Length: 351
Ligand code: AOF
Ligand code: ZN
Image 1 (cartoon, rainbow, N blue to C red):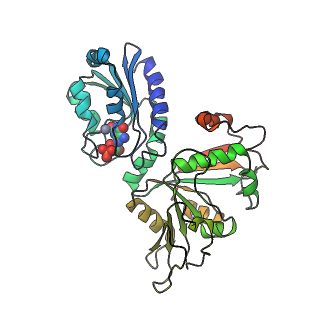
Image 2: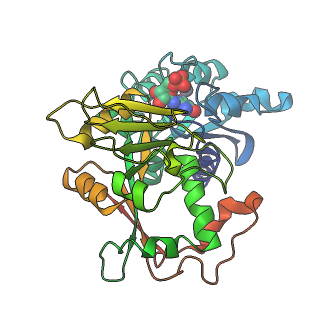
Image 3: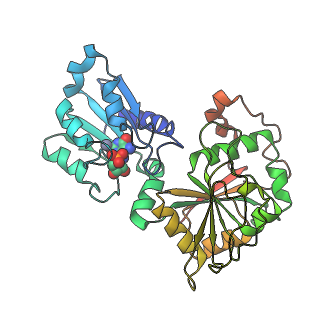
């Protein structure tokens, strides 16, 4: 490994994150092409089904620099793919362009890839370095890797936590969500996850809309489990403004009588718990990550079953997230998370 490898890998991570919200169920991937310390090209995977990061990086190289590629290093946040998916294998491109050195952060757990991309490059005589800033790299493909390895979406729990470590009582929720910065941040997260799940009690009492109104990008698919189909049809999650998956254990003869726009009723198998079934059905719908916005019962269910990957505990102190912090203009928003420290949000990962 060279000293500059980490520097250029960090740039790959920055590029990769530009794809947040539009690559799922594919991972976020960034690539940089370097010749003797000079960046010749950059690219990232912009949207599911479209060109991979390596392809976009190669395309960005000026015609005058093309001849330098065999003497250049290709940095990629994820191991180049070695399979035909929506696009041809990136290993073909690497060999065709003749890169002599490839530096990667983490491996792709997709069946058929799993290190074989790196092996193929090594076998062809390419110098391959892997594991550069591996932990950070894995986070970028965590949703993808969880989805393919465990056949369930990556589960992100988000909740308010009081100073003594307890789940904040429900009424406080409105308070910590009230700051302009907190609101923007929550909507940014909503834009980055293909699905958002709340418990029936939360849907009923908080009546959240669960769509993305204060950030660019899409709104997530809304998910709720309503055991007996008793949630009132007037709730905001049934307003048709985005797709809603309504899971239930209600008998077949009990019909959903709501405004049907965008609401899909999915019956779960009798006798089996709801949480694993909901996650399995989401995975079948190719939803690779889900953000869980409470309430306490749903969080406890998922924590108890070990069905979670990451937890973000937001400080529940009154208006804390909003105080003294200014929500920047939307165009500069990616930088604003930097204003938040561990005092505001604690991040945990499943051990
Ligand atoms: C890369 N670079 O930028 C991305 C990769 O062809 P697809 O889009 O269906 O994807 C097939 C495989 O490529 C799959 O293993 C996925 O994890 C990986 N994504 N690979 O080399 C990229 N997005
Ligand atoms: Zn690829």
